[in-house]
Amino acid sequence: MRHGIYMNNAKSPGWVRAAQIGLGAIIIILSISILSQPAIATVSLVLLAAVILLIVGIERVIYGVFIRHRARLPTIGFGILVIILAVIAIAFPVLATIFLVFLIAFALLFDGISRIIHGVGDKESRGWARGFSIGVGILEIILSIMILVSPVVGAALVGILIGIALLIVGIQVVVAGVSGRRTAILGKADLP
Image (cartoon, rainbow, N blue to C red; front, side, top):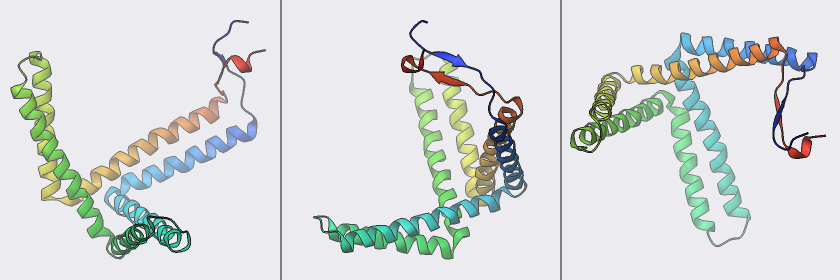
């Protein structure tokens, strides 16, 4: 047999297929719930991230207190700072979400302005490339202004994008379970 890579299209075991279909269905249901309330889903994700950061901050403080090393005080200090910011985000998840959405809006605004300036000033690129750059910049500026006027729009947009991504993943997992095909890429060491 030749050296290289080949595909093995054997059927997956029944329990794997059932697990794929079940997990895919759960992902689809979760994505539909996110798409039905995208702004609330975004706030929930910010809250979850804040809880994770709280745990990380506690771990940093514990590490700094009990493990001797040169950066002991900065580790404890930054751990305490992470804990404080995480507690604030947990206490005020909507405000934390709005703050993050504003950061995204300003990033879009500055990137949009940069793309327009680049598109106008770039004399070496073809006309369609310059036009595309200017068009994307205008779109980014419009989107950023919409988000700055109504942060709920930004939170909803983030939730919608997450919901669509989960929906696509869920459908793919269910299809893989229904078809029962598994595709493994085998290397030279796996060849008979």
